[in-house]
Length: 255
Image (cartoon, rainbow, N blue to C red; front, side, top):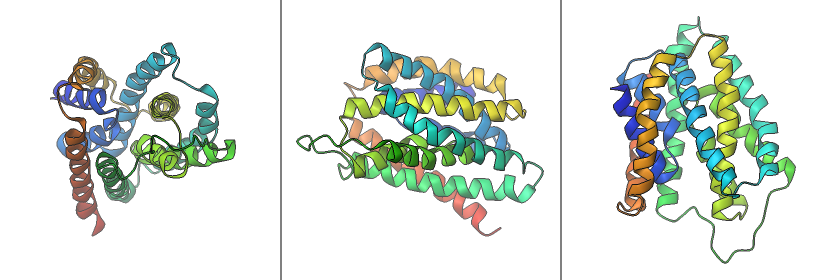
């Protein structure tokens, strides 16, 4: 089942460039009934490997601007370590692990799901003729910190929310935006996954099975771009994330 899940998630990531962590973490919690803290750590380890591969490809294609990635990392990495430390230090607290963390994850998934649908409908995108407006370093640091904190706490939402903030307030060419998102996501996931790994909250055998499915899935998804309408897939993906978020929110908001 884990390999099939990796294949599906990899396919969606390869075709749309989004949805990896947002799909994998709720799958691990809701379907595999994994401990929420271990689910977050395992997803981050899975994301680190897949995003490093994507970041390397962007670097080879010369679409990556390194300075903005490093500025975002200055905010995101400390914030993610703070978030992950908060969760890990409360592993013995049943309320935090079994209820507060899934509740927070549900809220993040709802926000991410809405953003994905808005973007698919064309309500959240840069206009082609707009002048290029790049953030100042402090803006990159602040936006990175917001995404990093969410990733440290839940493993979800960093990439989508960071990209949404950059698209709302600034105008950056689409190719550069995707390259920045993937490369920064790789750096962020690597550091945050290390925190969970050192504390023993990563299921490595499961991570390997997920990767076995995801690697061919990404390849198939990239090839399916020309066949399956991305708009339809993105809307369906956003609705799926929204439903998963509502499920987690309802099941944990009354505790």
